[in-house]
Amino acid sequence: MYYVVKYSGIFGFIKPWTAVRDSKTFSQQFLTPSIIEGIEKKLFPELLDRKGIFKIIRHKLTYSAISVQQEQTQPRGWEYKKKMFIRQRSILERGVMLEPLLALAFDNQDDAQRAATQHICLCRNEDVLLPLEVERMEEAEFEHIDGFELRFGEEEAGALLAGFNRFNDANPMYGRLEITGKPVKGL
Image 1 (cartoon, one colour):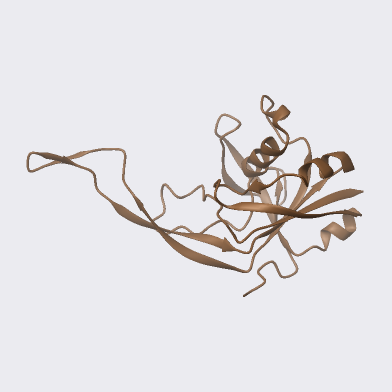
Image 2 (image 1 turned 45 degrees about the vertical axis):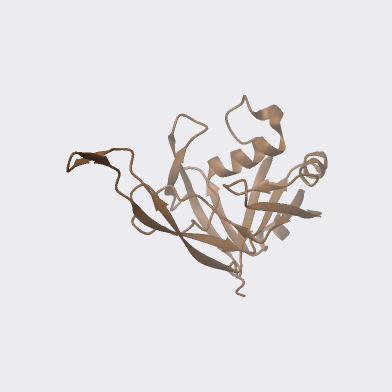
């Protein structure tokens, strides 16, 4: 039995792990293990000193559209030109999800109820998602919820490298992307 808390917001940003290398980067359409772990640590601060995900057992993410935003960046280094030190600037394009809806599944009602009294953020503090409801459902019902879900683990068939875990010594994160139903709702 799952206890599912649904969260929604006006917009949400997922930090792409490839942003350092890519000239154009859109938001990932799935949540990595480190993002889920960060959300869990926000909801359950007593887990801050432990590595891993303990309470959130599944998730599904949908949204209406992606809005491309521009961000000005500067490299760390300085360049010496014409007796002056300067820092180059560049523009990155990143996608922000509009109207994200996130379903988090827990295996007990107490954890779900506690999570449902708090807001979450996907990656930036200004992208607040608020709880809508807590729903009890069978695993088979959860399987049919529309959305993107990264099933964590390198052993998953078709696993892809999803980034490097900031909570676990920058170790690689792997998973298999599952897409159910119509995860992009359209405006």
